[in-house]
Length: 68
Image (tube, rainbow, N blue to C red; front, side, top):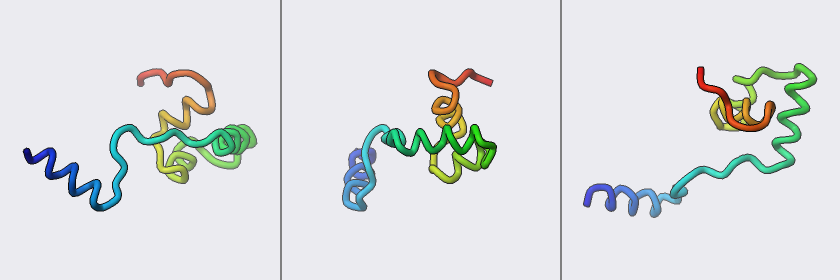
């Protein structure tokens, strides 16, 4: 019951439900280019795009990120 109340409140406040969408392809190309040129670090890109470092790593290196 409490979970449903929380979901209803989130919906009322406009929060998305479920898995977050991945960055669009133009943003992914920009991430790859900027990292290859040495403009920014993985952590800076992650902060800038509001995603985790592992997501940026997957975008740059393709496929799934390896566990630490």
